[in-house]
Length: 203
Ligand SMILES: C[S@@+](CC[C@H](N)C(=O)[O-])C[C@H]1O[C@@H](n2cnc3c(N)ncnc32)[C@H](O)[C@@H]1O
Image (tube, rainbow, N blue to C red; front, side):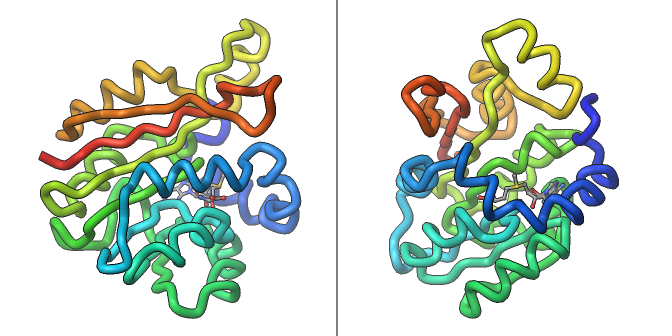
């Protein structure tokens, strides 16, 4: 386990990091990347969508204009309070990805970008996303990929979870998703495979 894939430590980290988050996040996560995340969910204006680990609302901004209704969950109030100010029409709920406070099959699609790396039990979190998604609905997850460089990989794994693309696919299959698709992408030409965005359909 890395330093930050512990719920309490992640919450404390984000309580302080939240102050700079909106300045730093777009360096690693571009507008094109967040568009790709939402494109893979194939949502329409009739859909009720859940976002897990919404943070200050960077991905929320892309989802909100393309969904009928958006519900967003995050474990850190200091992060979510910023999103609440930006999006008055979104329903924000404090909650844990690994115990989502919703009934089975409540949403047409479920999206999470850049949060799974902090979940101590990622498979449990993915299973929760699948549970609350309707049959035939899509689950989309963006995760930072395990770095290819050995030194970067050692440093990354000390901090938090950086799954391989293969690991993401395996978890999504185990969680009950079919037709798994993925892209590996990044914000710059020298960082083309920083993240994996994976989607699957609930059986
Ligand atoms: C890197 S930020 C990503 C925020 C956002 N999705 C975006 O597009 O910028 C990660 C977020 O995941 C949240 N998080 C971490 N562990 C969580 C958990 N177990 N349940 C819900 N949210 C969690 C953190 O509070 C933080 O706001």
